[in-house]
Length: 155
Image (cartoon, rainbow, N blue to C red; front, side, top):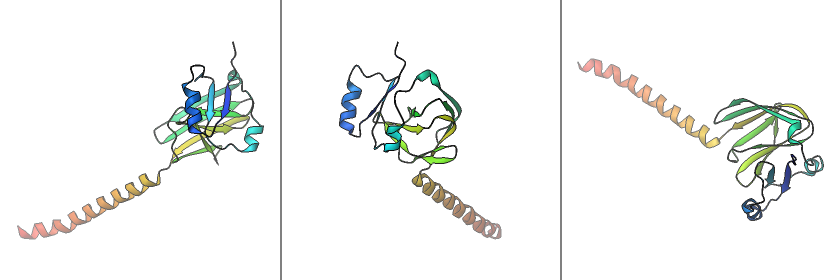
């Protein structure tokens, strides 16, 4: 049995879809990076033995995910959650690039060794909406406090 994983670098989405539709594509052992991969990353990866890696989920929430990863050689950590530009990834506290993978998902390049990996969803739109909501609540509370003394005097 071949327990090696295969990595393809295909920035073209149409080409990726053709590969994914192929019945020979093994979703458990193959990933396609749909992004420009830096030369230093390309040069440091080959085929990775699945048994040489360990991933432990430390925390998994909608907007924050933490993993403990141990790998005996460099490779990609594939997350089968939707790719979105609002995600940021950190390896041992240092921001790292998220690669669009298999057309709709995400992965990061992980160097050899033991690492704390964190994904944070940091949407500017969400933060702006939250600030507007808080402002609206503040106006509502202040307006209610101003109206309260006026209603007491009317009685």
